[in-house]
Amino acid sequence: MAVRPIRIFGDPVLRGTCAPIDDIDDGVRSLVTDLVDSVAEPGRAGVAAPQIGVALRAFSYNVDGVIGYVLNPVLEVSGDPEPTGEGCLSVPGLWHDALRHPWARVRGLGLDGAEIVIEGEGLLAQALQHECDHLDGILYLDRLPKDVRRQAMREVRESDWF
Image (cartoon, rainbow, N blue to C red; front, side):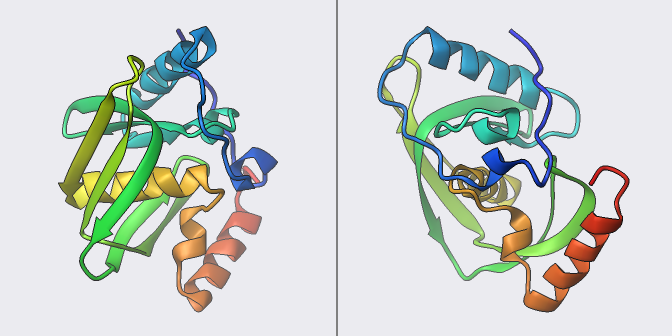
């Protein structure tokens, strides 16, 4: 349907816990279309529903040429967290090392109500963790060590978009 504008740090929808999707109706189908269209833009690995202003548990991903989505994801991780270079569409222009597990799996639903399972390492694992965080009102900045987070918040305040 449309590439939707990305909500930016400071927008309250980014800090709330998203509601589960109880009924897969036309509104949810439209949301998924918008999420998939929005993540297909160059340089995007994932877009969560709150990033386009919708407080529902859904996200899309675009990793290694594979575009998909999941509704009501439940995240599993494995391995010791390690610093991983990360940015966020909702915090433009910043890049910092956030702690992420090297492997992740998400179980959720597709539009037909059937189970979807997505799992992987590297960028896919990072994207799954990042997007699930968005659904719980967590930004990658919250995963930074205290001193790095303080510097990142200074960068946010000094940015031309804040």
